[in-house]
Amino acid sequence: MTITDVDSAVTALLGAERLRQDRDRVTEEWDGLDEQTAYEVQRRLIAARLDGGEELVGFKLGLTSRAKQEQMNVDAPISGWLTDAHQRCNGEPVKVAGYIHPRIEPEIAFILDKELAGPGCTREDVKNATAHITAAFEIIDSRYRDFSFALPDVIADNASSAGFVLGSTICQPGDFDLINEEVTLLVDGQEVATDTGAAVQGDPAQAVAEAVNQISERGQTVPAGAIILTGALTDAVFLQPGSSFTARFANLGEIKVSCV
Image 1 (cartoon, rainbow, N blue to C red):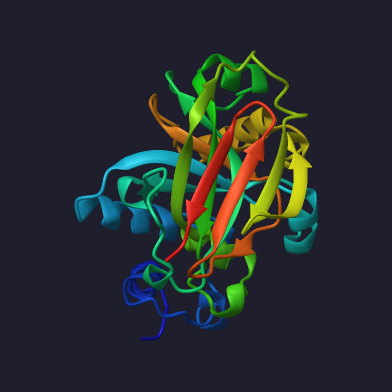
Image 2: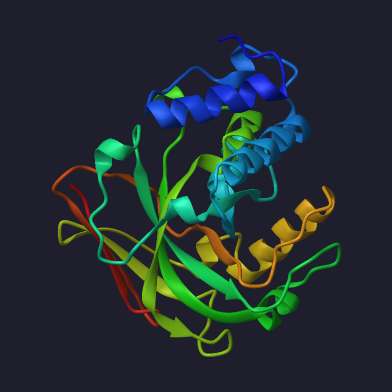
């Protein structure tokens, strides 16, 4: 199908996910897809998932590293939404065949007990609205060929959302230094990357505040009870059947994912 408007973009992206088939960028077919329109595609895509019986459970940030922002010519994170269909149980093997070309990245997750709304949301507002913080793995899976996209494409594609797993260790916002929280990523027991919370926009709480202020311009808020994935702490690595992935945090414990 040729993409010429919001409806056809939603249909194409949902179809690619359902069939596990990558496709060309939307912007290659529809030059009218700008950033604002892309968020409308994303909104309608999530609405279609909810109409299909899924439940909204969270919010996610993307492009939180300075390097990725420079690559995409932006100066703030993008965002997307998470449903219960994205959540995987801790310890449950991930079926690689259920995706197109999935990657995994360690993150810090906030669990809210109060709504977050902008404009004017601050890092302190984020911490005050947070019930607890835990480790997470996010699975990303672009519907675009070779993970190649322009900014409106990835926004429309719900920021490459595909799945997530939460850790079992929980901490309160004031228990440790978010910015300097260190994580080591291991693949099959071998260390492949290490970084700290500063990799997320300099401060994960500040990154969330900026995203909340951004979505307030579209009349959206993040509800109480939501899970917030704050963005990748290291580069994402591809999932492979038979491989295992471990994120070892200084204060947030360890989280593991195995693939079949």
